Amino acid sequence: MTKRNKIIYWIATIWLALGMLSTGIVQLLKLKEEVDMMTNLGYPLYFLTILGVWKILGVVAVLIPKFPILKEWAYAGFFFAMSGAVFSHVANGDGVKDFFGPILLLILTFVSWYFRPEDRKINLNHSSL
Image (cartoon, rainbow, N blue to C red; front, side):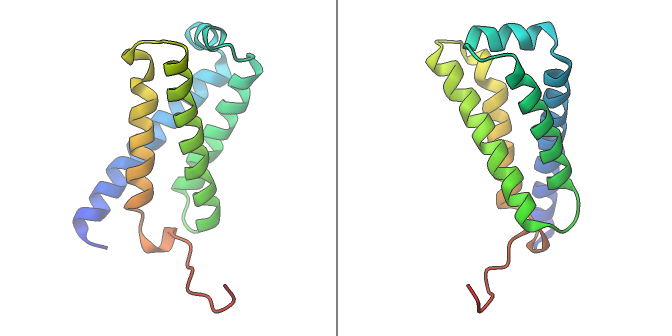
């Protein structure tokens, strides 16, 4: 892995982790803005707890060394959560400001995943596969 790629990976991953951790905490705390947004989108409020817990666990999975399969699941979860948020806001007719955050986190998810070091990837070179 080149130094450039390592820098890109860590910048994207740190920003992704901060974004997911902060939104996960806000969702767990059920702050008024989050409750209003979920209500506006038509989702039940318990969805905030589910998203908050999984985002925080996903951040832990992405940041800890090893466990490449767990990391793949975390990246997939981030992708599904953020693409779902974007589509929910678009379907609801919300403005760009409402889906800017999810789009940014979606981009950071892809960049972090794409530039992750070899030891954070699943090794598919096993003869049993």
